[in-house]
Image: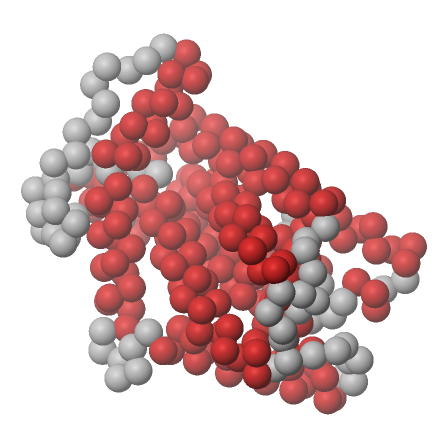
Length: 285
């Protein structure tokens, strides 16, 4: 399939791997082979979504920057002025936490409905079903990267100073993306098999948002209670981004180690859950 052709309108050239390997590792290699063959489909899904999302808007993609900017500006004003939060460069601190959080929450929400939304395509085209949650994660990752590029000017205006620590940001975002993909694969299966999970996930994300130090800093809590933040799977990723973008410091070794472990665990668990139930998905749509 040509990258410029729509995966819906064009006759797909994707053919599943026809000589399956034996064993768990061999099955993983088969799945990676099939995903690689479907890479143009994933690319088309990402480009088509980004094009359709803003095609009738006069500002186009700028709305993906203006919406979070206006929201975070209002939150910064409320929490810094009304609640008198004493945090140096609070707006910068808030932006540094909100950007990765928005990527995670949108990816999970959209991944949970990705199989259901593409029911017609799943029934007609022999694609690896993992391409649909993968595409949703990549769509939001693209938005995050473009937003970071645009917000870099804003960061400088808010008082941020360039530091060598910014070189570690791609590593943190890569770990967050792997963690998000694993959670997205799990959410896609759970919501397809149990439709009530789609309503539950919104509540869980909202609770996780307030349990993550985005609007406040860990230092605002008693020192004896701060260890509880480590029970939050997003804590290491959000804190690392804040250390890089707000503090201009390299992320801590504990944060990176925990983030790497959680990313691998989430990806393995998500793959196993998705693979175990992939063949049954078509009967649940």
